[in-house]
Amino acid sequence: MDRVILHSDMNSFYASVEQAERPELRGKPVVVAGKEELRHGIVLTKSREAKRYGIKTAEALWQARAKCPGLIVLPPRYKLYRRYSEMARSIYYQYTDLVEPFGLDECWLDVTGSLPLHGGDALVVAAEISERIKAELGCTVSIGVSWNKIFAKFGSDYRKPDAITRITRGNYRSIVWESPVRELLYVGPATERKLHAYGIQTIGQLAQASDAYLKRRFGKIGFTLRTFARGEDATPVKPYDPAARDVWREVKSYGNGLTAPHPITSASDACALIWLLSESVAQRMRDDGVRARTVSIGVRNDVDLTGYGCQVKLRAPSAATRHVARAAWGMLAACEPFGEDHPIRALHVRATDLVEVDPVEQLSLFDDPEPDWEGLDCCIDELRRRFGNTCIVRGTELLDESLAGLDIKDENTVHPVGYFHH
Image (cartoon, rainbow, N blue to C red; front, side, top):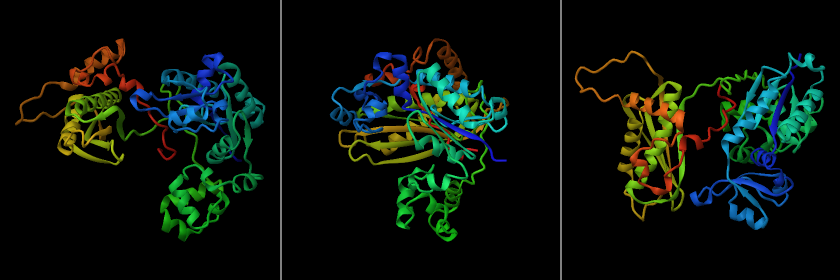
């Protein structure tokens, strides 16, 4: 028997939440965008009304305002969006225990086993979920229904907003296969160009691509994409844990990056940003009980937006902010001359090569023992949990006044877990 899988996608999520919270904004063109004063002024999401003006996600705010002079621009409120995401998932959880988030605003639901409890009709269940989201949250969703996750997601994207689309074994050739190949999950611009160069324009043509071509141009992922196109994906919907608010996944790295509010031309400003980012990375590692053996940085310049990266091994695995920051700063100081001729636009700090914290630690017989920097950080973490992340800040982070008061850990956005994370 075929599975019954739903994919629910909340329409214009950030903007819809803002309109739900502020009814006076309903029916008006609204965008949620980054702070222009911090050089983050791009559109994160737009309301249905703003979309009619041709405003697109990721375009600059000045371009959006040129298209719509009366545009209402709001700053993001990630805590609020997470709360709405949790409320939506609590509704999904009342229909099945198999709920897999795909970012804040999307979820797969496997209702195969629970469908008889709700009338036995997947479209009726989808309609009920849609109406409950609308009535209880004030937002709308588009829902796709199919026998596999890929086609269910295709269905939720096929018609927007506030729509339900069913992809069956009887209609997928006329709906999915006739659609442009870019509409398939994980076919991005680069993959699309490669497929077009071979004459593959539609998903149906990809479904019939030869083994030789896929192996030569894409390797293993080519066969996976063809499996997706044929509707043969058997990947399960992984259970949702309401307590953890996520699905199980193996975390392989912790990172945080930031576009600086101004071009960084001095060592002191660069050092402030490095410590700020390292604090976020190390604190999240300590929260999860892991340490890193490798620290890497990414640097993007402010002239032509080109960049580079480098990494270094730590002497011993650590989750201490001091060790992460000193390793990151050592690499940056060795690579950057600093000055008006070499402005830095953005920095990224990442910790990889993770190990779990071992309660038994082998000390060296030859090196002088270091202070317990990680233990000190854990004490500070507890204070921050009680009084907020900005209750204690490092003096180094105050060297750049434009970064003062920035709660970088709270504002860090963890991107959706990849489809292949299992």
